[in-house]
Each structure stands twice: as structure tokens, then as C-alpha cells.
Length: 72
Image (tube, rainbow, N blue to C red; front, side):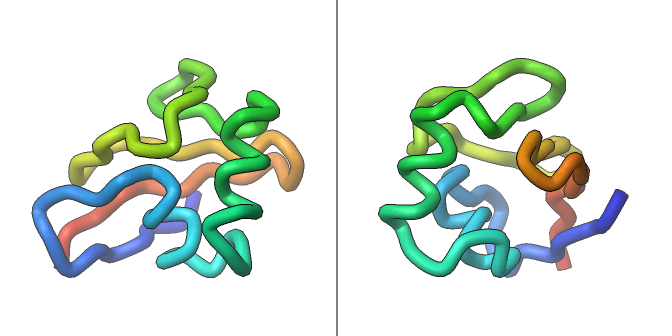
């Protein structure tokens, strides 16, 4: 699992995907989320505006990789 450091207390899921360079655009993030390809803490998340907190785990099914939200 890779740790991704954010520079704020929280971050929206779509912003996190862009911040971590997992997608190239907000549109790509929206597509992945709406397709059910993203899990947050073991649950499929369909809301791109889902608020993430340090310690949350984001899983991308398409690449079978987990990322932990960390605060720097």
C-alpha cells in the first residue's frame, strides 16, 4: 500500500485521485468513480465529492492497488 500525503485536513475523492496522479482529469476521476471502480475503506464509493480523511484507504480495482490518505 502506498501512502499519499495531502496538504490539508480533508480532500474530496476526485481531487485525491488527481492529486495522487492516478487520473489525468476530473472527468476521468468521475468516470472511474461512477463505474464503481473505486472503493473507500472497503466500500464501493459512487460519490466523487466523498470527503476523505487521513487514515482512509482508497482502492482502485482497475490496477488492484491501495492508497492510504496521509497528512503531511
